[in-house]
Length: 308
Image (cartoon, rainbow, N blue to C red; front, top):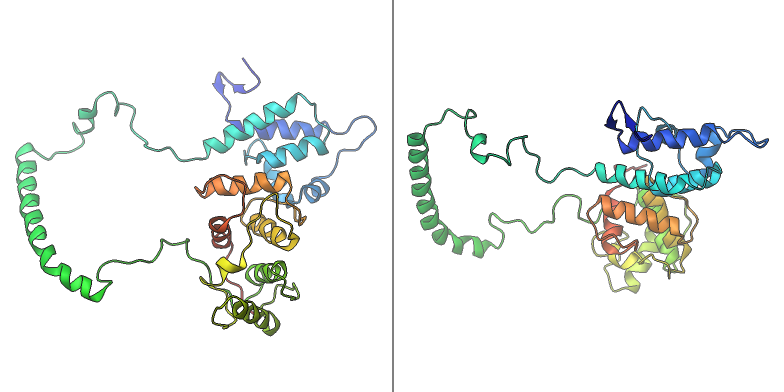
């Protein structure tokens, strides 16, 4: 029996990981050093104390990400041999959070016909009648569609929406916004060379800076950042990025999207891991590059609008 088993059953990776991290913390008081408080440790990791408490609580199994595991291993001077095991548990816990592709009953694969026996009281004659009705209805629809296609085409949008699915549009940022929308716009304006104060308040000065940016890029200068302005305002963030304000904006959005990230203004290996973690959670290509699709997903992962 390994230390990952309880009563003969494999322990959940998240619980095993939390137990290991808890042991690191409890055992950190040695060689004349005091055990750090959770408050001071959370501050060092760049996360809040409540989140850290969950990571250290085997009863909660909050699945600490690999980046936090590595930082805890260093901060608590945990045994070197523990790191590989902890990272393996973190990956296993993260994989376990993904929904199963096709849940099925225990006998579904062995006997497909069994799924119908005892489940429905519909008789075969009733099914035959229903099938005939469906065929008749299908023929009517086939006849009706050509007759109405011309009308739909004439209107251009009848019955069909070209609007992207929810959560894929660029959000609208404008005067009066505060907090994340205002701060992100201000940081990106600075990264593009337009002077503005980063105070998380989308006031007249920020709106004026946006107008200057829009005019410089051939857009209508309305002072609002929407679907036409965002793609020009965002900057690809990767290891070659030299604009610290753009990197800070990505780190800020990652942190507030639930991926704890240090705000350093430098694209570090930790930033790359956080980007990959976020991209994987949003079914984006896991590249670690803050491209346009990742920016849009980050903006849509923030909280509700805040206004003055």
